[in-house]
Length: 462
Image (cartoon, rainbow, N blue to C red):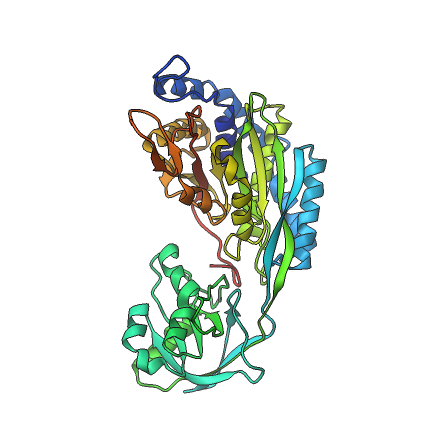
């Protein structure tokens, strides 16, 4: 975790320090890319100080120890739970005790779903108790459960082709794993597509590239006008087994029981802390991770690690006595697992000041040894990011990948920002632009750390 946190803090601090002149020299207040490149290089000593403190100094392992204390004390932190609210109050106190500025809580209404008791037993062609995990927001079954024949499909197209066969059955999706963003659509939309063709329930192969008989939970979404049916994830192994059975012509029957319930929305908070900028306090560099987790794990990797390295970013800068020119703002999101509820509420509350956001970052892809930073923005902005990342050469973390995104920060990407820069002669709606000094309408950069692996432990969101 130490390497990831100083990648995070290094980029964050250097963007917040940048004096912020525009890339192109159209007037006396704007500077060339070469001048910005030279300025970035001058922060070499600052980067080394951050690296030394995080990796070799008194802050070594600090974020790990802080995270271990929280997860050991609180445990799982599902949306709407008492444990999540306890974690928020603990973090609120921790950030105050750390000496950060403007520590406060911003209210959010969040979903409250509980899975209850759940089971799935194959009755034919043999008795087999299956491992399952209900998907977030799923309804439950009747107390006696649902007992029905199974239809196994490998895609939504196959389901449509065999729609007549699906009526009155439990649809089992055995979709091949392509990548997370494509394959997760079966978890999100599986129940809706099955309900459209008259299925009684759906079981989705866990969205994972490998499995040790481990079902993965996660959010699913119902659709207005479509009947709600119970839905859960099963293991890769069981999905493959039923696919083989079906190919042999075996009749498969499953009894599914789910005690899942949806309760009225609960009160919660996004947790916020800052280091206020010395020269441009109204301009914000935002770093973030989410505090909530699913109920079947401690949320240490998804996303305790991301939340705590984001906190550590501010701690390291404070410990070094650095005062950035722009305000560094830490946000610990609530209810990310339910579709970024906390992130959306924050965006709604702050979008009027969207022009003041220089950089938006989220860490939510695991805290393994990083290889660089994912980034979404213009090519000119990317060039500046690449220069900043060269300062991490001492630890060989210099790559800039594309497609920087995150559930809680995607709202900023989708919004776009009208920007005039460079040789453009009109205003264009772009998600990002130069990281340098704001023009008439300032840009947003969206980035997230990229690591060499992601933990998918049993019961974790895939």
